[in-house]
Length: 272
Length: 303
Image (cartoon, rainbow over all chains, first blue to last red; front, side, top):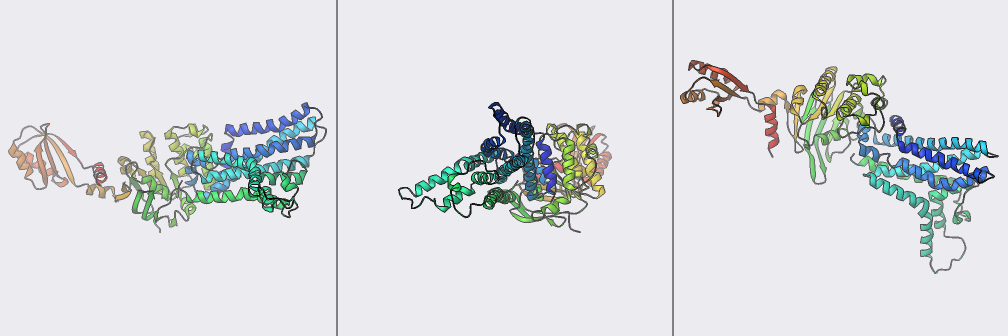
């Protein structure tokens, strides 16, 4: 399987896309802009910077993942470049792996590049800086963004028009980041309306579903690793045994991989 | 030695529309096979099944013994393809496109050599999405030729090319065939197929209505020759006399006053000798052979 040729070509092509450079500029502006803003407000603290950034990263990095992922396959199908690629000795699995690797490297490079530039700003203007904590933070952000990138790439494999892919990808983004937890608590409220709750501990399925939502899994890992960010009370106050980092990692991995498997099966079956 | 292409009873339906209807076809190694048919006759559908872009509703397709669906990668490892409906990668140059093909096929070398071969060296470092149709066609042809494939699959290869470009491509096809490559190419233009193909298959409404050599098809078109003869003077009796010659199907005086004789190829001289015997001078003579075009029209007019 010759997927690295596809990954390399994908990266080469991405370097010519204005959108990718705009995204990179956006990240530099976001990361460094926040650092500069704290300096302007006086008394910049590295820990304060990380905590503030955590909120923004939770919304913006997944969005970047969605943006980089949604064209992965549908873009090639609609432009006809998939015809070029698949008329060579590439399998559809190879094409998907190549595209996923290419785009993931791209997202990682965008985050790493912006982080590197911002670290210079911080080193020059902040009294303290922890390289380890900074790197762990960016690493987690990268993993979180990759989850959304793979979800949107999976939609890009399964659906047959880019309009549908864009609509569902952004719908999924909003659903997973903003709507997931409210829907669970709303469901809980409807199901148990009027019934007095015997204990303060919520139903364990409520805790579980909240916990495995990618947003909560990510903020839980962030709080465990760096002690920053906010975790929903349902999870933070829970004594459930499944509230451990390994389950959060597993949940994120499942969010990334399961849609891709489904997307691949659909793409493999369909006519080009 | 397995055939280069083996198509067994292949049907492809899109909903209620049958694009390819129970096609059987064998292309032997070393052949140049022309695949002729109007646009929409099912040629590209057939080729897209060879490439596993789409899957047959029934039947099997093999390339050098590899099933194109189950072992598509192995099948395509032996192919160089100029497909239909391709697009160029945004912003990548012609050189980068060839480089991508080299990496994909595991071929070493300088991309420029390939671009040289198809005559677009000057455009090597320009973004290929800005190429004209003809240049794009040459670029993808260069990508197809990489790595000396055993089978060239070319879908309407000369579309978008000017006559000189089309001739250069035909010459390359012949060179590749002499190197040992089997060539399978489709066209809706008969002359292009006639110029290089050993055998021809005619697709019509999804069916393969004829497969034969060019000569075989020509024979099928009938051995009839039409003579248009300008003579100084003749009478109706002369016309009847000519019509009476064995092998002459019809003799008449055309609207332009010329004598028009339809006869078998072998009878041509007999007609001229008969005119000579009757002391009729032949001032001018024009013959028309039956063309493949006529046959093609005849095949595709049916049904």
